[in-house]
Length: 331
Length: 274
Image (cartoon, rainbow over all chains, first blue to last red):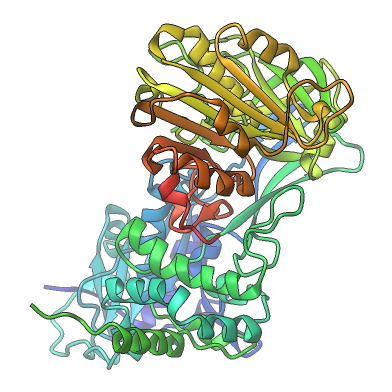
């Protein structure tokens, strides 16, 4: 018999989790849905489109202090609290699993992995989950009142064993998966995208030149992307020089100085080159490194781009041009 | 698990001005030792370290001393940016940090039994200097060995004391663009020196480190000499920041300079556009 939780019990579950963990979940703030520290569990959103910033903010924070040196004594960043991120969408879970793969690839990133070990991920899906993308526990809506549990790890099972859950046969089924977006469909063929982007560098330059003019070089697309992970490291020193922090911050390959080296040479001097590199990393370098495009079609970059660039349309245009120029040879 | 971003403490035990804007730092570990591999090397020539100082930051430097030296390591620091300018302020006895070595280094086993041509310019010499020290320590394993080294002026040719020692073991050919009245070496681009050397092209390995234009000029000379691209090894320069293939600052085409390089086959990088 499936283990379920009634919608009314979810706030109680969150109150319980808050006793031993920091709990973060999606909530509304100034007209946007954002992840935040749960104070009032009734304000937590279960059914929402996407958050503004992706949940990577909890594992690869916008700024984190990697090391603190006080009078010559070096201290590595310590995580004090175990925490829960609740209400993750399937796409965000999918992105976290991919980010785990990236950060686990040797040489691995200790700071990311430490944060990942400290967290419990709870997904919520208003539709049928199908193959669970990842996380510790997923709550799948099967009726107006009930969510079915899919416990994927020991941590998830422990939560699903709590008294807020019950064994219950429900005759309803989860709502079937709604039609996916065009971008979802394009992403089914990572190899084709990789070939098309690689081809476009020399053979369809006009699109990159155009995008280089349109792109404002603000970096927003990379900050809202659940799978962008460029960083820079910077030292800060207290006025009396006794305390130094080595901080790692989000960076963006679309920003002008990203590939600049000491002495002033810039390996990507134009916005067109930088914007191309953003695509090249996501769809070609990533494909060669991990076998899959680094995009989960969350559409955040499109929604928040102040210049209105829609990567779905860009990919579609390049792939169409590529297929027209290089029709598949059939044997 | 070892935290690869955690640097270790070193102390400056020797500091030497090599030219107007390059200083040679000799750094010794404080409270730890450089681990050596089975061959007794603490790094492979061509590998780099992230060296810096708390409160200043880190920058990538190729090891410049003999990789067999276990007690300390040398790096050449050209004053070019914020970190290097701050490091130039330091004095003997000051503390710094180091982590690494990172990257692949030159493929030493491939070089063995072959003629070796090393080509570099200006401050691209440190990784080549290390390779030379390795070759001299194992001289019997290599055929004819040449160093072709060019710089703007005679003052910009670094490691003068060392190439006087190297000359006893390998052929050193120097060139400058702007000679001084007492200059006795060659004048002109390093790429023109290839006429001076006698090699067996099918049994030669070439190591290069230096600015892009030199590599491009060499393409027109090493190739006509019959040296295949896969016998030419180039050390690439980018802004290596994390050193572990994550931060994306050092990418070129589909490669990470920090983990796939910094030494590449020539054909791996010649088609790269960034």
